[in-house]
Image 1 (cartoon, helix red, strand yellow):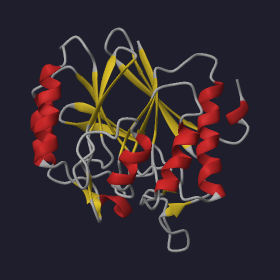
Image 2 (spheres, rainbow, N blue to C red; image 1 turned 90 degrees about the horizontal axis):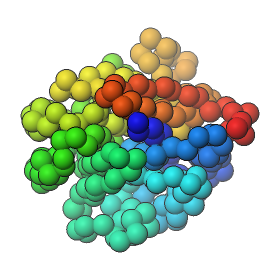
Image 3 (tube, rainbow, N blue to C red; image 1 turned 180 degrees about the horizontal axis):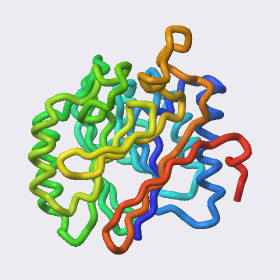
Amino acid sequence: MVVFAHVSDTHFDGGERARERAERVMAYLKSLPRPLDAVVVTGDIADHGLPEEYREAREVLHAAPYPVITCPGNHDVRDAYREVLLADGGPGGGDEPVDRVYRAGGAVFVMCDSSIPGRPDGRLGDRTIEWLDGVLAETPHDTPVFVGFHHPPLTLHTPYVDGIRQFGEDRLATVLARHPHVAAVLCGHAHTAAATTFAGLPLLVAPGVASTIRLAIEESDESGPVDRDAPPAVAVHVLGDDGRLVTHYRPVVRDSASAG
């Protein structure tokens, strides 16, 4: 069995609000009476991509005693991300994508960089697509694999986000279809918990930590698309020994952060 938490869009900005919300989520995860195999963070870790924002993120996200697995989002800056969050600096440099493989709890997490520097929308570059295909081919077929990135590769029916989703997704779908040991696809960016399918696989979208995006049916002229009052939330994914994946979503109100 593999059990891991999935959070996204912490948007550390040096302010008290973003830090408190992220600390609340990590305190909740740390307080769980049974351990997690990992915490996966699918991008937009920093709000402006500044080194000091990543130093704050490193301090808060590593407060819980679990492996922390990350990928960049459109708000992240690759050089600063590498320098502060990756112990070895990661492969490449400059504007090269930050693509990494992690192993935890008997599973492999292939984290791809869907960001396009200077743009809010996303795309997996040809180099990343080729790299992903190679990693999946080299991973034993009895090992479950989770493929993660920031931008959802399809429409979620949230107008505020759909125009800046991941495009060029047909190439990704073709690669995933070749590798049946992929258990699910993980992403963020939408600031709302969502579950659908992509390339015949579960596509699981983490809720936002910094804020929540209202659905089209929830939004009014007065409210706007962004809800800053909704509590931060976390997804917990459970891959059973039978291969069935189950996802639970938990809002983290202040009292729940101290529950144990």
